[in-house]
Every structure is written in C-alpha cells, then in structure tokens.
Figure 1 (tube, rainbow, N blue to C red):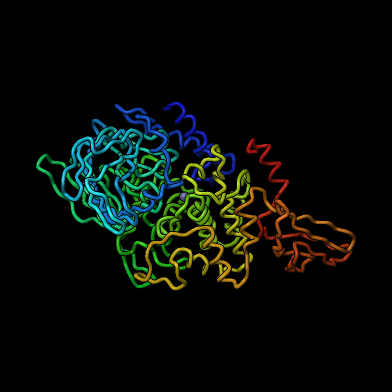
Figure 2: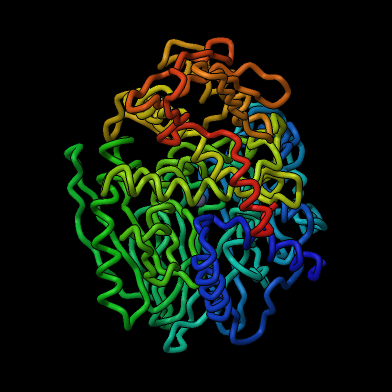
Length: 594
Ligand SMILES: [Zn+2]
C-alpha cells in the first residue's frame, strides 16, 4: 500500500500543482529544482518515513458520495486540544464535537485515521464502555447509549493519539511534514486537502462537514510558536515549560484546520480596508531572512486591495489575514495560508504563490463547493486571479503573457465537471480519469472567455454573487456559503438576462474544445463553430478586417461576412476566446504533454 501510494502520489501531483504555472521549459526546470529542495527540506530527520504509517482507502477519500445518515450530521462546534511531540513525531488529542443531526441516529460515524487509536469516548459527559466503538478502516463507529432523535444534538468527547501519517510530498499528497529550519529547530506543518481532516482529528470528512466554530488548543515544546486558524485567544504556559496556543475560528473548511509549528518570527500590521473596517495582517516566518520576509509582507496590502476593489470585502476581516512560512509549497488554510515559495518572484514582479493562496480566502474558503466535482470554482477562479492581478498592476500585455502560459497547459482529457458526486482525488488526479490541472488552467480560460463575452461589469457582478450570495457585499452582511456549477450558471443567466447554458455545456461539460472553422472564398469569410458532440455554440467572435474590428454575432453557430477580396483578416485578434488550436496541440505533442 505504501509503494502504491508513493507511485500514485508523486508524479501525478507534481504535474498538476496548484502551481500550474510552470510553463516554459526553463520555468519547469527551476520548479523541479525547487521541488527537489523543498522535498529535501521536508524529509524528516528521524523516525517516520514519508508515506508511513499507511492509511486506508477510507482515510484517503475526502468527499464523494456520503451515506444519508452521515450527511444528516452537522458539526456545530469543535473543541480540539492537540499535543504535538516533535521528538517522537506523535500526536495526542482530545476532540469534543457538538454534533447536530437532521435524522435519527443509533450510531455515529466519524472519520478518523486508524493510526490514531481512540482510548476513551464520552457522550454528553458520560464515559462509554470500551467496546462501544471500533475503527477498523478509518471510520470511527460509536454505538450510542440512547438513539438520537432528528433535530437533536449530542456532545461527543474523543480521546485519541498515535503516529499520524507522514506526507510524501506535501502539498501534492497529505499528512504531517516533520521538517527542520535552517538552524535545525522543529518546523512542522500539515496538509489535508486531498485525504481530508481525518488524518489528524475526528471530523466529518466532506465539504459540508465544515464546523460552524472551532476552538483549537495546540500544545508545543518551549521556544516554538503555533500560528493557526482564526483569532488568538491566548497562550498558556504549562508547568513543564510547554505552551498551549488557543485559537478560535469560524467556519473553516474541514481540510483547512491546520498545525504550523516552528520558532517563528512575526510581522504584524493593521490593514485599513476601502470598506472602512480594519484587521490585523500577520506573517509568521522562519529566521535569518528578515528582508525577504518584509518584502513578501509588503505585498499583502496591495494584493488585498486588488481583491477588495474587484470582488469584495476580505471575508475574514473579523479574524485576521495570516500567512505562515511552511516547509511545503503552499495551501489555502483559512486565515493562515501556507507559504513555501522561498521568496522566488518571477518576471511578473509579484509572488504568484502568495497571491494564489490568498485568492482562496474568497474562492474556496468564503465560497466553498459542496461537491468536489465543482472544484473549478476554487481553482479556476484562484488561477484566473493571477493574470487578472497582473492586468491590474501592469495592463493587458502582462495579462496576455500570463494567460498564454496557462493556455499551453490545457489538456482537454476529461470534462471539468462530470455531473457526478466526486471525491477530491477523483477530480484532482487525472490518473483517476479526472480533469486534473484543467480545473486550474482551462477553468481560467473559460472565465477569460466569459468575461470577454459578457463584459467586465457583469463578470464581476457574477463573481460577487457567487462569493457572497449578494451583489452588494459589505463587512458583516454575508456569511460563508456553498455553491455549485449549476448555481453559477443560473447566476450568469440572471445577471446577463440571457441563457448561457450552451456556453457551460461546452466549456465545462465536454472534454474537447470548440473549434472555429474559417473558410475564405474570395471576398467572403465563413466562420463556423464546431463544438464537441454537435452542441450548439453561438459564441460571438471578433474579426479584424484590414484595420477595422467587427464583432460577428455567430447566431446559429455560423456567419458569413463580406471582407473584400484582398483584405487581410485576423479572426479573434486579441485571443479573447478559448478554442481549439492545432498549433498548441502540435507544440504539446513535441513537448511530450499529449
Ligand atoms: Zn489553488
């Protein structure tokens, strides 16, 4: 199982990285070098081997089809006390879950990796007899002393601990990262987006298992810090010299609840928002690189302003904006984004990794998909915000260059949206038949095409309604929400007053791209969309005839225009539309990408 896990996790995940911005061969080489050094850093100095202890298929699954009795559960509150032991690479935890249920329950099924055995459980304060629970496969099944009625709630206290699974190559697979700083101090991180929260704590490992509130109490050795989700309630000093870091967060994605432990230094300043509110921004970083750390921190405010100006208020302004340096590349942990890009800016002049992960505070954390099948809403949007930020800073040329880098990576092997209920890895891993990195790069190009078709104002209104559920978000007038592809399409139709189902039927629900067939017959140009499976596709196209630009409506998917016999014609001269390109296909074949 371990070997299989390694071979599955490494190459696929490396291809698709969030991170999909690799693109020119030079950049790819640089990336591989960086990944190799990050991997070296992440390799634990002792004890646990990456990939060990092995985890079951149930633990690896996050999301997917949820049995009705599990879907009926809701996590109203989590109080999670975790002791972290870097020397032995073990965890000891007490999780007190307040669970509501909308259906009667005789048993409770809670996700927890079986490598973290349970030593005690109490229900509403009364200890259960040993034997009332079992966890053979990574799903803790608790027989309740009394059945629960629909509409009732129960407080389950679970004491557990053991040796948690160690990631092979976080963030492309998940688990603990037991690393060391440059001066050989513990540097610990977790990732869980693929395999889910059950790697570390008893949880409901599907998107709607999101707890309404979490209180975290992270106990660590003296001299270390434990920045985490939400607001710092306080730090307790224990008699043995250790400290407990108490954090309180609202509505974190289950996979977003995270450990970050190191002898961190800290930069904090107050952000004054264009919406009139203010909140702390903090960067926790490992020592020795203060100037670089300050340089990254100085990107926080202008990046937040880009999102606030175009999308809307920073969603967690009542908590904080947090970023923490990690031994792995990155992850969108809510209010404590993981940053491990080693301060490597590219020619855009901004740190794409920081910018991408911050984007997820809107796309992924504020709006979350209930079914991983709609994952493009997280990643397509986060990816698209990179060139949109380039455009905000420097204009259309920067935007076009960045979009081109994405364009040459689009694989078109599977539709972005399958219409089925999916686990995270069924979507993220193209080896599993999923769209893989197309949720990033093709998602971004779909959004590019949509913006060019409906205009910037309507595009941003669609985006605001998606993120906040309303067109006029202000701090305090919205809550985190779940969305879906179907809802997205209905928002586009509502905002534009037109039916754009045909647009999404092709770009999201078909693997192949639409092809624009051009035929020139003397003075007549005929344009015809050929969409996969004969789908209707009346997408308007710009045509430059000589120096005159015209928008061809393409009603019925075709148009004939009189251009004049000698005219030079360029179709879609600003690359506004995502369409098949035989040149890119040939390039991808040559580069071994097809
Ligand atoms: Zn992402």
